[in-house]
Length: 199
Image (cartoon, rainbow, N blue to C red):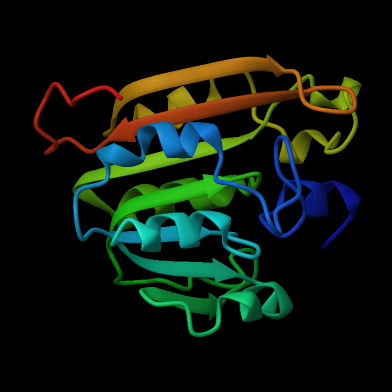
């Protein structure tokens, strides 16, 4: 059920360091975007108004931009290389059954039952880029509900199911007004040639 904490974590409800409507892509996502191979098919999950969908489409990727907020998705109408889909990832079965992606991007959103689906939908040489709020953020403001806050090292535990970690960070970042506690992951699938180039 939607609540104020959920809206603070969704792609449609705010970002670390700015509002989603006109925000530049996350610095973490932009930094590791070169891991996404040319012409890749990218899933931007809980994309809101699509700052990352636009970013990857501008890089020449084919993007599925998915969110349950049809109004937010409407801002992507007609954008080249973006397939905007109104999907609710918390109601019913995984709505992208049978689809595979070369990269999956998730920011400011957490619904733990999706983790196995994300891993299954990622190509064997694909890239997972994830960044969202973590435990300790309750002292900074919303989200404060532990259901929407990653545990320390939780993304590393997700990656341990078949991915290789390229980079990981967790801690407090100085964003207005009171900072935020976040966790970030960049990881690649088992068929990605190793070592990958670092940006």
